[in-house]
Image 1 (tube, rainbow, N blue to C red):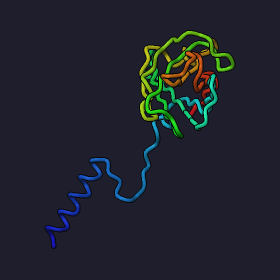
Image 2 (image 1 turned 45 degrees about the vertical axis):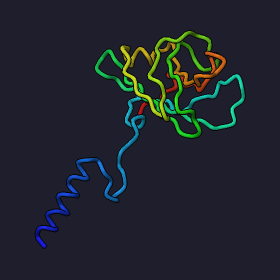
Image 3 (image 1 turned 180 degrees about the horizontal axis):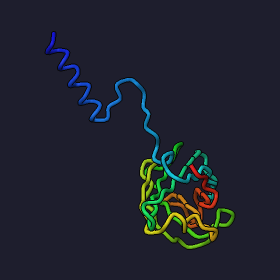
Length: 153
């Protein structure tokens, strides 16, 4: 009896250390939920109408004084690989050239650390995140989120 109790305890401890959920539910937050600032609203800016619904959220957090961690999470019917970038401006008219290329959004997730301060990215000059399909005919079309509208978490 004593050996089986020890074995059960060892298995439970190993499962917890391995990150398994033992039925108590998951308390883990998404990477976006843990960010300092969150962009909740992404506006569709596609030239051709789309039938599927795509939702995105982006989180920005300072990494020291001079770097920013950008995480993107998507849900809905999205393509397995999307291009993500930061541009100057806002989502009313997406015309500016790319400032930073973010890591591609693969299966709904992306994480990039930029050599730019969070303060600068949130500055009044305005930046936007554009998430676009690789086959999109226009380089200025996609899901657009204004960094100036990011809310403090």
